[in-house]
Image (cartoon, rainbow, N blue to C red; front, side, top):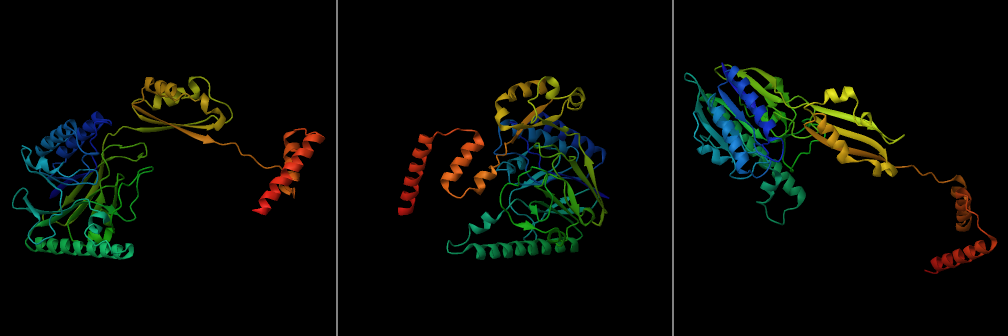
Length: 398
């Protein structure tokens, strides 16, 4: 049997909850070791942005610990900057650590061959993040949008055909092809509130299956999901990268026969921090006291969690909302992180029917004053009528 550990979208970020990420990755390694995996696949977005020394140190520690368990193979994601991952190819580790920042395994003989236990070999094919901009930048400025769209689709098809041919060659030589990519799959479900960064060429699950790899390991979408009984899958992120990701987080354990025949794909959950939504309604009256922020039962449920505190409040009462006070209270009660959202309810202003039914401007003004209870004297009414006549005359002349 061949066992693969598939993880992606680590998003190591010292501006975020770096200690949480390190703890979750440590739990992943513990589970992967227990599962006795033969290969660890990292499908992109190791970093959140251009990496810092502290973030690179965290990834290096993770990769060195991972290489004590099994070889590590990964690809560049859309958040990873050029050169940030390839430098880890020189990392001193017990087993192979290799990241592909450029497509690998599309040209005949270019797949990364790696021996497993016994006489088994896997052929690793990689499609790092690419988008339409990469392809369009090679075109003449005179090429219009529709033509560039069709050329982009054709280029993607040609690329997949090349990967397919190499996968067939590998299988002919008795090598098990594994495909790793950071890409957007058309029709995939995203976490609530997650923003997909960048505009890319969408690939269909069937396009990826048709490559012919024993397994297609995907990264980019943070919500785990699979197609074709697990032969094509997103592992999802191992931790909650933002408040819009309430779903379970983890990795995928994929089992293949020695000849590459697919056996199973199992999602393994990791101990990512819980997320708690506290929703409050202050539209009838502005909340007073601690219970208006969180009840005793809610306080017990949010200890150590990421808390999203949402209040519905009238626009005129916004000045009474002390966000700093709410945040200090929730942190003091044990919340690991707090996000405050105010849903502002604006007062609906309906026009009086007398104003709607009035014909002339003067009648509308008089109806407005009556609706507001404003008394207008005879002399004021005469001046108002004269002024409106002057304005209407000027408007007609123009």
